Length: 210
Image (cartoon, rainbow, N blue to C red; front, side, top):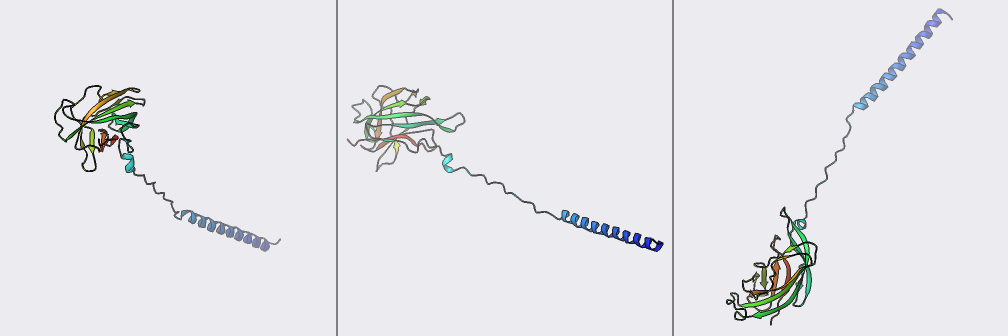
């Protein structure tokens, strides 16, 4: 091969190498540019916390407090405040409306009724649950009828006998009589729960009209 021919071949090879280098450089530059483009970042909104339901914050003693006629026996949930002042159901009680008798001041050797009429209500309370229950009665028995708004009916008058206001251990019961001062015969009397926010009744007894 002549000198001129070898020089031409070397020149052609060098040009090919240069062409490959330029193509590679452009490709690398193009890829690098793609890598530097800003990428979209997905944003996730935090889940909205559920607000507590108004029902969950209620401390009603018993939304479905039983209603008894004389002679009935029904159960109710007994609730109280815990050490952190939160209301909770403690145990279950049963109540029997044994009898209701309208009496005069002379019959009970007491003072004249301020509201107009005494009624001696005999109840049997029994702890049918698994924890003690401290039952309070005085100042917590409200009477009402269609014409008279609810009012405290408890009195200091008594007929003797066991006291309903006591601590009931599981299985224990008391049959006692409270003398109530009401405005008229009939209506209904409820034992209220002082621990509940709205003093909802534990139970209600419908009184006879005679």
